[in-house]
Length: 321
Image (tube, rainbow, N blue to C red; front, side, top):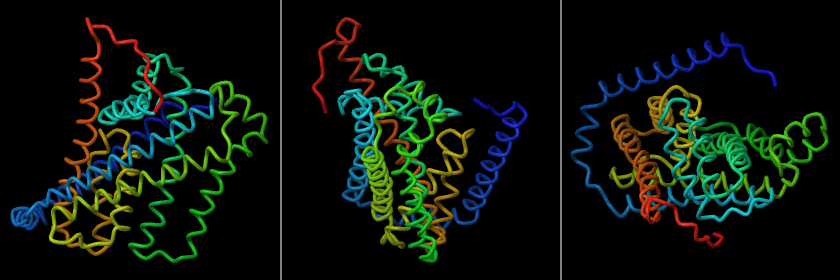
């Protein structure tokens, strides 16, 4: 396998760090410029808690869709993992993104928890990584389509996301037609040969559903905070997808801090929202998203601890999800 030299890796880290610093500077400048107006808007806001509850429900539905796709991938690869077990692994692994190099931490958590549940750790971690790659591709498609509707991209460019989805669906057949590529992948990821176009379609639509539900959740949160959301739902879907993808690129920043806020702010302002209103949404969304990552994970860990009588984990079998 070809790996980048230490000099290239160092240059990439410096470039990513520079982008993150630039976004943080832009965010700080926005806070200084629009902060007083945003604070006034926050003080005048009457939080509608029913909309906050709706935002939480939509976000959790987004998590559920993503885990459903992951389970389908594992089932097709011959790993009968219960849905509830995968949901717990997924929720706890989300804590890894709050550390630098978050994806590596997430994969380590996935592997450790899978082994603890007598699941094939390597296969579970590899499937999670594969689904993450598919999720990024689908996220770009969602960003392109939703962002195009929100900020006015010409319809002819929709051929790009359509081609991307077609490439995902054709991926298994293309891989099997290239033995020199397929063989080393099959050795590292046992069961990959069983992945079909139907599997990829499930991964595609569940990933798209996850992105869209989180975008709707962001819209519901904005509706809870502002007198009106001030932008179409598609703008919030694009803002969520764009901010999350920016956070993935900013690998040196815990949970994409700075990069996510800068991207979300840019999309919502481009969609016509007032800067002060955008700032309220961006700042509250960071706290809201962090709580949605941390609280379920802590609840799962607390439940696991309580389920260990005498300090040992119960070995009672779980029913399939």
